[in-house]
Amino acid sequence: MLTLEDFEEAAEKVKEVTLPTPLQFSDYFSRMTGNRVYLKPENMQLTGAYKVRGAYYKISTLTEEEKERGLITASAGNHAQGVAYAARSCGAKAVVVMPDTTPLIKVERTRALGAEVILHGGVYDEACAYALALAEEKGYTFIHPFNDPAVATGQGSIMMEIIKDLPTVDYVLVPVGGGGLATGIAVFASLLNPHVKVIGVEPEGAACLKASLEKGEVVTLPSASTIADGTAVLTPGDQLFPYLKEHLHDIITISDDELIAAFLDMVENHKMVVENSGLLSVAALKHLDVKGKRVVCVLSGGNMDVITMASVVQNGLIMRDRIFTVSVLLPDRPGSLVRVASVIADEKGNVIKLEHNQFYSTNRNEAVELKVTIEAFGSGHKQSILTRLEQEGFRPRLTGAIL
Image (cartoon, rainbow, N blue to C red; front, side, top):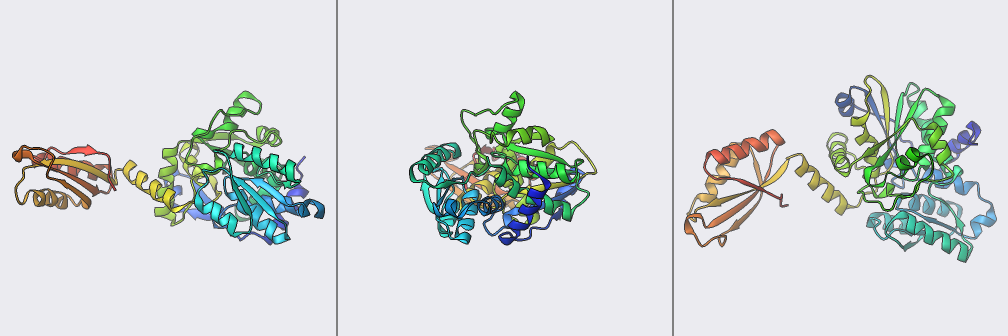
């Protein structure tokens, strides 16, 4: 059983490698939900995620012989950096097996911390199976990213800090991959204050814990498909499942589109980069059917590569009608393009890209296709621009946004 003494020991131990991440009150999310919403920014840790807590505490419990054999783990990225950082701190060799879909930034940062990185498999579970095989073959000590009570205890140190910052907390929203973070926080919360409700949040495309809770036993999904790569896990930890079953108040699943919207909300209103898995808790706010409560969202990590970030921003702007592309057909005459631009300018639209195709048709009365990508304030503004173009006789046709 996980005890209060275990959590207190872990909370003190992890202070050796963690930065303070005090709760931040969110006026934006509070107004949006009718609750008092606070953010726990674990994306601001030295390794960019909370995972260093569990990794460091687990390694601190190993014998010298276990550390001397070398450490190996499997990870989609954040636990990898936690193990690499902790191993370097105690002078141990670290080998990390990562899925070959892992964002480059997580791979490079893990290597920069001194670990040997092996890319294997399309998802975490395949990487884990290979890491276990290597541990057996070469005698390495395996550090599981979540399915280990000691790792979960280290992650639970987050709850100690939440309670210190906000003793009256009512709800804690926690991202779930394999369940280590959720286990640590939920069990520790039950020991500190049984009135606190801890809710796990999973991506819809990898909701292994929800499937397991519904069946009453650990379930393995046939596949995972989600932009939340850090929580793309097929099987929750079997050692943790009894704790989760007993202590989690509820589970919420989130679509990829909701994560994209949450990324924009976080960047525009809090000026923070949070990776898709870390945004699960924020996206879940809209699903929480309560008012007037004190709610903490754990932002589990911020290790997002720039290419993914650019894609999320672009898709988010398109989803919110902040960017759209319209096609109009023009007569092949001087001044036609200026007329279109003037209409858009009159409606306060901002042209960010033009494609002018003079070879669209052999009919010189309608020989030119103009594709215009426009920045707008939102759906209402987009519609006013389209209506005005229609009124001016341009017959606008929406196409896929081009950036």
